[in-house]
Image (cartoon, rainbow, N blue to C red; front, top):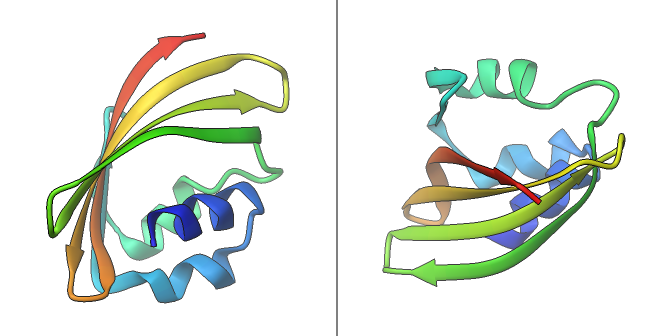
Length: 104
């Protein structure tokens, strides 16, 4: 599920991401405070797409929670690392919390 969400994001395919998320999905980051599903797709899926690559470096699974560490490269060529905490409700992603990392 996590890899599918990241692949959908990188491919800018909201249609593939929507079925992965619960109806009451929420998203939080240093820039977004507990926004709902509609705001997530409106505010967090940049147009045109901003990322060239997202390389998942580690995944830690603890049942209904998954922590993902990744390095992303923007279209402009800069790189950064983030951590995300994804919580599941059944077979869907109920929430994502992003913790911004460092460049490179």
